[in-house]
Image (cartoon, rainbow, N blue to C red; front, side):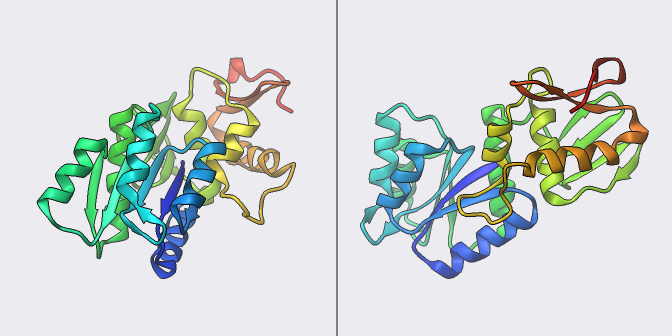
Length: 229
């Protein structure tokens, strides 16, 4: 998944980005509303975490602009302001959730996953394909009840393929979901290397990843894999 954090506190931002990176998710960070609008203009996000008291304005104004522009991206407000009136205003403008500072990173994670489920990005706690089952909460993959060990980013890639099980996923979309702006690991063949690694991990399952030339990748059963490249 790819998220955007709009937060001017550098320490909070580092903690959030590090936590989600360790789980395999991409989390872009903007320290101002202006920077955030620039990122939103060029990147689609699965969800946005929005602080209200920003150095160049109030996050509510950005939220209002998003909703006026019919942008449906889920927005979770993150704020020290506990006032009921502020929370109600946020929900009236179009916020999907509201979390008080200080907060537990595990709760932020759980709330974001809940937003995605409500938006239909995930069907529930688990996704399955044949005897392969992926747990979105525990972040693990099992085949016939046995855990298949995957690195966090490899898990994230397989998660995207399973969420889109009935349609191919382009390489550019996989890159968007897995990597934040400026992430050093991104290279022209980063996705291919991860696909190769996941295929090896799944060899004993009979489930593969089919490469569709010029289109992308799709998870497939043995009789559907064809030529994998």
